[in-house]
Length: 80
Image 1 (cartoon, rainbow, N blue to C red):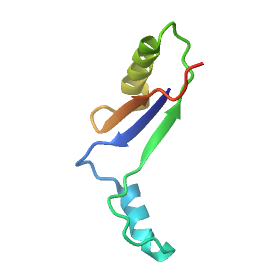
Image 2: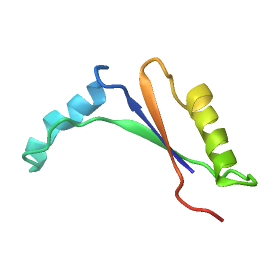
Image 3: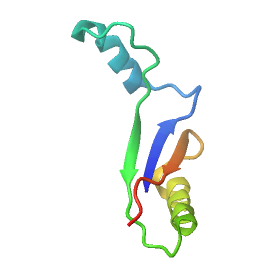
């Protein structure tokens, strides 16, 4: 499973803004609305994909993100 955590829309992202300001000096024109976040890769043992997704979603909201200011998205990236 993969959990992507990003700041909610409307929450200031100073790290993203700093990156965006630096891009033209590095030769990258036309890149806008840079947002930063975190990605977590998890291996979850479960009898079903739905069960693994439930565990990942619970982890995302209880531990890996701050639901007040961040969004978390769970994606299945591989099934063993």
